[in-house]
Image (cartoon, rainbow, N blue to C red; front, top):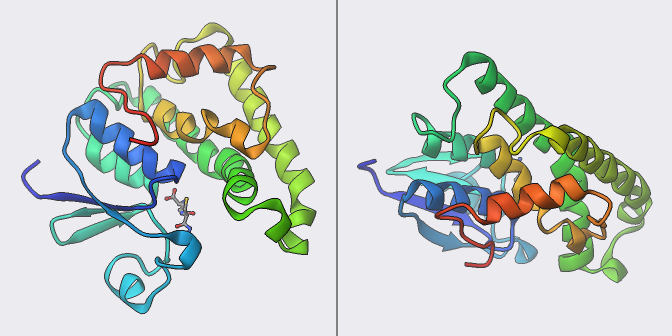
Amino acid sequence: MTEKLVLHEYSASGNCYKVRLTAALLGLALERREYDILKGETRTPTFLAEVNPNGRIPVLQIGHRFIPESNAACFYLADGSNLIPEARFDRADMLRWMFFEQYNHEPNIATMRFWLAYVGEERLTEAQRAQMPSKRAAGEAALKLMDEHLADRRFFVGDSLSLADIALYAYTHVAEEGGFALSDFANVREWMERVAQLPGHVAMES
Ligand SMILES: N[C@@H](CCC(=O)N[C@@H](CS)C(=O)NCC(=O)O)C(=O)O
């Protein structure tokens, strides 16, 4: 890649970690720019006008162009690499898990983690508190589905690491910070260990 890659991020965010992990596994250099989302730094007029009108990180900057949405940013970095399966079915299956991550997993597991570990339970609004039981149940259902899928597989798609694993690993490996017990999900725990052992793997706080 010839253009400079800049990651606009909040380093404790799993969505941002997905992009850093993808880049690390591919040996790509990223310049990092930190924003404090607890202080609304992605909601300033400048950020909205120049980086992402949706007011969120991560955003991958490629030269003068910007790709918001973590999974799209990972796809940009990995396009043409072995993190994207060659077989047509497997590529679609990889996308299936990445959409599952965004719809069934991240809105429950990541949100619970953010509320409990970063905002603090005592500072949640009544509306947020009221959503906690349903988010907990939906997060547990997502983990159970993953655990069942991994019963006879090493990785989510085919027999090697793909972006599906990276997308799901990011918030699963810190799910306990959101109050989710991983002790019941042995297959998930073994898969997380497999991902953590990969050459080039970087930890979230790196
Ligand atoms: N679907 C988006 C979600 C992005 C997102 O929710 N980012 C959060 C941090 S993980 C954020 O920027 N929050 C700050 C805000 O909404 O003001 C993705 O996968 O990148």
